Image (cartoon, rainbow over all chains, first blue to last red; front, side, top):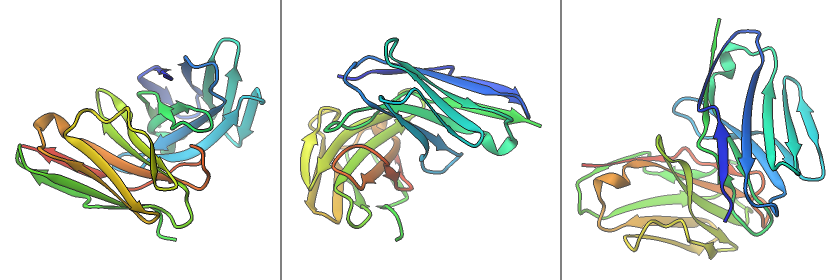
Length: 111
Length: 114
């Protein structure tokens, strides 16, 4: 089955800096890669996703890149703000299967 | 729409007791998922249903865990008997498609087994 590794487990940045979180997956058949953000005590919420036929996707300050050959994908947050502080989860999956999540990255943005 | 509704929000029980967690998915969603979240293991898939049918229950830890989805608007996750290592946040999520995309999570049930 699918296995997703996520790094780093914690990340601290200064407000305005960029943050990068990386994930690798094991199942070459996976073709859907979402990212979820979970604020303290809240539920995970989808912030961006990418499919395997696309190499990069942007939405304002966040972007996701995918390298199918290497089986890794990354989340990039630019101009970080204190409200970006949260736990971020990557996931991988394909049609007919449930998403498998990485263990999460705790991002702390200090002002 | 009120989103995915889970109950109870918090459950404290003693080891050996039966625990039942409940979930109401978003109306019209075809897929329902149960995940367990702990600090050590992150978000683990327990089981998922497609059109009320269990598709993958390989994540269910052991026979003490069971899940049902008797209709499109209700699912339960039962632990009997409960053990301290079951303490975690249990999330239910639903998806509008017969796939795993665009998951909408409930608020979760914080379970503490003493």
